[in-house]
Image (cartoon, rainbow, N blue to C red; front, side, top):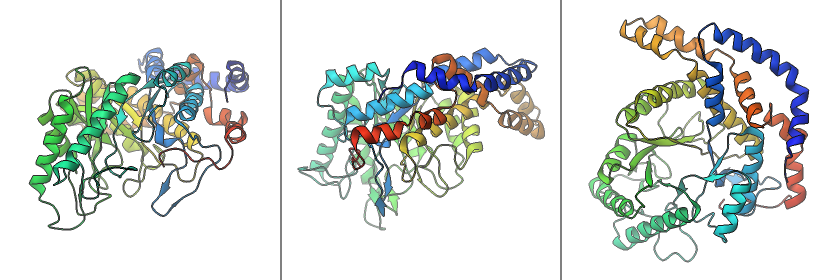
Length: 426
């Protein structure tokens, strides 16, 4: 399916008058606070989030999976779906591939298809948390941390192969997430597991191209429930430092224990120049992988406050990688991704409204109440007209979800692909 420019213009024309009145009112209000509205809109227009190739089909839990009609059955169809999302939102300009779930059959053709849909290739993700068909060694008891040298060598070789695949596509970073851990006390020697992991990561790091980055992800629990080898941001940071200056910590919002102060983690990592990027999602209990901003929108805003401050004041930290990492069990996956992109843009826009100078002065003066007022004044501002204007400016839809439904995108995908297709890799 293709969404034509005229179709979006026709749909936008129905909402243009209402949007203009809301946008003009907000512009006048913000201008009185000396906020450069055009600058905010440009930053929103420039902000791009990578869509993971595994998020385009119906997700599931260990209790079951309920397929969604018209799911993409190939990498080509996944890129086409991202192209649809990007056409509507103008914010999804990249794809993050998971290997070996989405290895291209024809690299030239895949790159051409991505370019046609204005999609770039973001970080490539390795997979040593499950065994693949005809795999010689098992990862049941670990991969990069395994007590078996043969298992470690296999996992290292896989990560190096992922880098080679990424090179062919134009990616510039590798994301490593390890499921390695233990479910029972005494099962692992903590020091040995960490040492093996560090040595394995160094071997991978030394094989990366000179212009590549390594993102090291962490998670406190699951699939193992007594210990995880890379259980927190401090361990990830330590391992990154052990690899070299092009290795960084990756923060997944769901990979924290309840009520962890993620914004503080973000701030410290940026200060140290070691925040590589994000996996956006939301959670109520743990790694729930649900729609961004659906549970803790204020926390997302506070995280973006630190990100905006860091991007302005921490030149030692590299340009960040942004990616959604979610699993859609009930919703239309494309609608869910559109909602997540909206939530990310909203949190970013609100953070851009914060008077960082005034906030800093209030902090220095220990004016606690004023600090709260400054933050909450920005948070309570309805910034959706700014996001709509950014989309309008770049040729997207004023209301992407409404356009998605009126254009009957899912119905067209079902007609093209059938009701019983299953997305690859799930």
